[in-house]
Image (cartoon, rainbow, N blue to C red; front, side, top):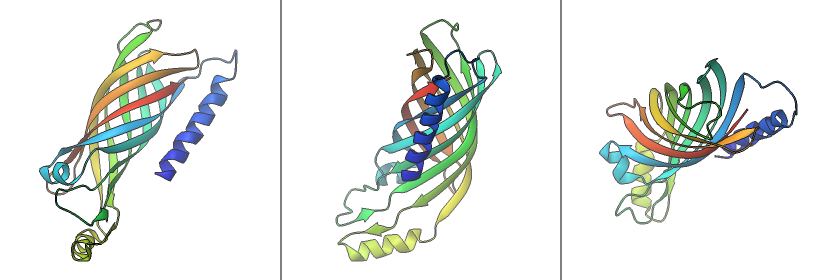
Length: 201
């Protein structure tokens, strides 16, 4: 998570520098940074053993058409291990890094203060687990043996929508929700992130 926070901080600092250039021509790209919570959706093993976690992301959007951008992004999601009856067990968080791009479309006139948008995209996801620890040594050992060395790199797709709120000439606030599906072995791992963020111009 420290790496994700550092990425978002650096992106935000760059964006503030760009926004401070008064009188400069409007750049043909936008910088995105945000995050909030992510809710497990499937399969049953995922929803039963993990609770809602958090996500953070940063992206760089390039205008392809007047109301369309191609947004390259880096994202991190983490879900805490929390099954019923697993007393004396800590750790075991599911961690998902995602690298991809979205086609993002706006549906309002440029001067309109509230702009709905929708997006669809995909890329690659890396899914791993933290080690387990705790006082229940028998269960901790069994769980660590199960996930030891486990890591998957799989394609993902996502689709979502949201709203932008004009905040200043340099940036807008946005709120979005989406559905994410990672093509993990067996059943796909799916979750629903809800994100609050800033779009810098």
